[in-house]
Image 1 (cartoon, rainbow, N blue to C red):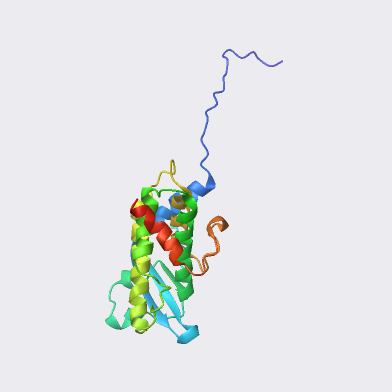
Image 2: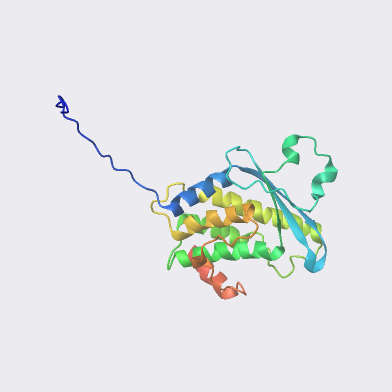
Length: 224
């Protein structure tokens, strides 16, 4: 016969809030973007075979970006005599084509266009200003003055978009529009994966011309 229990035992349940996966993904992407110190781009090939090596240097050992350094393109900066181990080992080294930079621009633009029917939020206004008034990787005369200029322009486009996204986005997802959830992930995926296919399909709207009508539609909100 079992002995009687002298004390009553009680179980206390505690509620735990579970964060949605897309919120976690956005926060992790934003944390990685803020750890980026600089970006270096070099090129290889000619004409339709032109490819660009994007090297990402971070200041965090906890960065979640995949350490992909398998690019076959030799950096144009290698002749400058890199001496430090930091300079020689980027966290990420990945190859891109020019149209992938254009795709990134369009994805960022489209996500903000779909996020608001009227006036844009502060995040979208600031990032949109960079997209509209900054470097346009799909410009008509973008490749006219040689590949060295293209590399400088692509570097500036990537660095400026990264900086504006990291500075303007809020870590807290409460009150954020859909663009503020999607844009950090789009930029993160561009810098860390071989193709940006993981970007949510909901913001992939056809925008082949990036036309003047859209530009005027956006600029109108800045002067309302």
